[in-house]
Image (cartoon, rainbow, N blue to C red; front, side):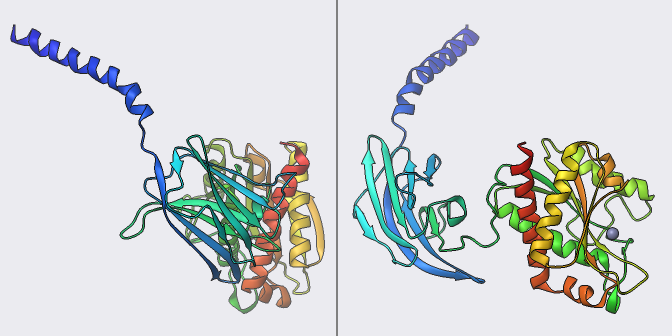
Length: 349
Ligand SMILES: [Zn+2]
């Protein structure tokens, strides 16, 4: 008897919940604009306008549209279940990056339109949200960039997954060049710069190592060590490209230039190599040694298109110094990222 009444109460509660559920969904809270702020910011070598729109609740659903045909310089952001609050409908911006920002309520949506000084293409703006913290409300952040767009951002890479493999590491120093420069250090530094650009461009990056270590272990055989790197690609879903970064070395100090290696598993491998090579030569401005077929383990055993780049010669005096130079590393990283974007465009994949 006691048991039955417990059961009935449970059923009653369930029925009440089911009845309330649709009503609750309809009454989901509407968020209001509670603050507005905009200022020109300098971060590193980049100057841009940052607009912060404070909201009374978390910002989950929003849609960003740019690149319109009719109004190419107009960026539109639609927020679901939001209203303008007491903020002005039209706000003039700094003039250097932005013209005017407008709030408009349409049904349950709040539409924000921003007039930019340059076309509202992917590399010229950034929209993201920040959670409530201490004295700051939930915020929608809009960043507007000028001519030349966001640094360290490459269009056409969004949504890709790429494995970046910094050659050597740990007990394996790789080649040692001018002034005792170690290949394993250069490959990691350049790989980190590649990772940053790719992540900025909307890529999911998987690094085979992020510090100075053996990927498999210090006592591994060469095959075990290389297979451990390949596994990052083969066991991560939907990897588009496996990219291994190295420096070249030779007994003659005069050898110099940039080259890229691939194993022709499919026609895509050579296409990838050529685009990486072109990007590096364009940005690094070293001698073009071309692309070459090779039986490198990581290229052969990766189940996706793969390439191994040799940035420059660590054993050459000029190139050794360049490889250790931050600006040259940035240029090579940019060249690699652009090469990847060109490869995706050319492959149609
Ligand atoms: Zn190497």
